[in-house]
Length: 172
Length: 100
Image (cartoon, rainbow over all chains, first blue to last red; front, side, top):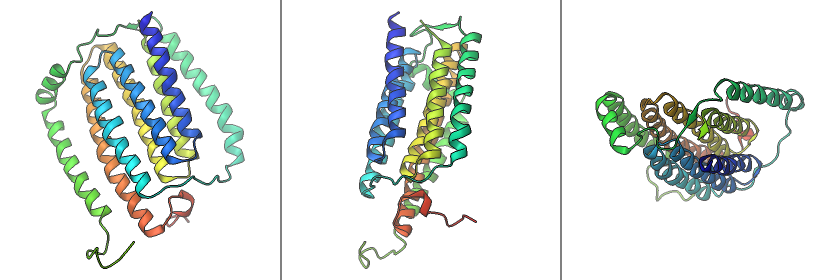
């Protein structure tokens, strides 16, 4: 019962943050509500027994990635976005279609898998087990991922560097 | 005890919010944040299924998704900076060089 209450509370927080991300016009408000979404998702991971994933979620997502986002928003001094005219057809068909689709998917999911339950801590998601898997069964993907990160670092440096190599020559 | 389907419904809601934001937002950074929201929704369903089938591979996969998302964020934000430097705008409607 306690699990259900915690799940519902943080699930509602999650959805509220996601909807707030859509509603806000200013990017910085959207970024901060995305931090709320990621933090409450970490609690959901803990409820599922995934301790390692919850820790990584807080450190990498809510920490590093969102700091990068907020940094870029403040660096570029992003203002409020202008409203643009939406398509009338999208409103006419999109909203009823989305409602029907979501109700259908939710109903099928709840009907088909309603009896299975998850107890917190039922699955050993401790960092030790994950690390063992990562360095035994998934060693090759892990190393490939490290190369990917290296390429991403170099790509970011190349893309973000000013075309004028002589940076002091040109202001702005 | 929480039914696994509740987690899947929550993940579906998050993914739908991400898709909606991707379509209606007009700021490049907001669109990028919507993509991160979609990735988070998918991660939640990965962890939920890992718990259901008692397979830890799902959690390892979430780890890989997070690494790729971090790399994507770094490159994407660099691209945004480059776009802002050349076009002086973050509005997606004004970045239409490839539009027919």
